[in-house]
Image (tube, rainbow, N blue to C red; front, side, top):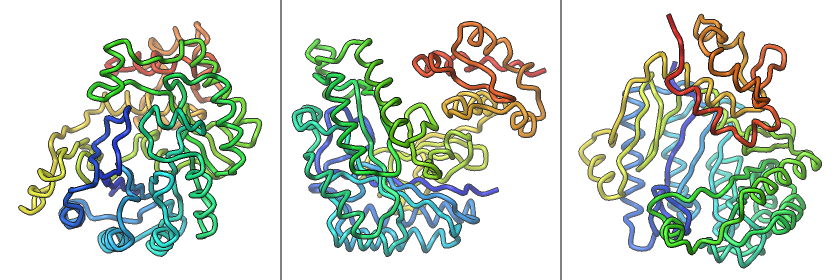
Length: 384
């Protein structure tokens, strides 16, 4: 079956944040129009190879997709609809946005183009911290952008929050949660800072000039986030994601259910016909490849059965619903306990995993050490 989800990458932003290692470039001086032509060509080439069926979820990420002008956005969204015309009547169509970049005119274009969900990169509601991590927006921009999105008719909004930031305190996180919940979005993503190589923060970290919170404070920030959002009607459905009833991100569940998806744009990853691939990075290189009518794939490989089974466990355990023995058997015609019992039984004994009916799930303690649990499944499947 063809993928039911699409990821499209717009690599431009007004400013590169100090922690960002994504494929993103400051938009000034970039060949944006040429890029939109190139991604249109990639869509054409891709659907010719893997014709689409009904699309259930579309996610436009970046970068900051909302740095596109209204005319550029209209052109881009029209192109998507042209190549992927068959949408589910209940499609989830998300775009990432930086607060302060969504003008009323742009919001109207987005609505007309089919977008029905916006994910705002709020990160924190403390002004000094926003400046310290290289964000260009302020707290008032977050509040104004959410208000304008509501006025434009958007009924499904998400806010990204970050914890473990330099100089951030547990009280900062409490204050941010209070102000964020007051805006009543339908969804929250809350991520701890990861210091990635090649970023300004990594350079400062290597020089011991990055004043990060200690591990105990960071753990407290995560526990506080989980508790506060739960108390305010946001159920945790994944390690880092919380939603009001019925508002869990459908596109992200594509990843966690280990399902296939189209990946389009420079630096984008995709998973089609059992093949995982990554597109080339660099706008000019990407544009040149598409001018030749070629798919801009930098690397790809066929996912073998063992890796697919391991991914199913690792990704599925990120969800609060965990992994079902019955679903595992239906999908792979194997017994989960025979394949992975030697991996998960020690974690059960240590109190990090538990059974809930036929589902294997992380415990409260397991949520704090999930990465250790996930890593233990790599290259550990026992299949006769």
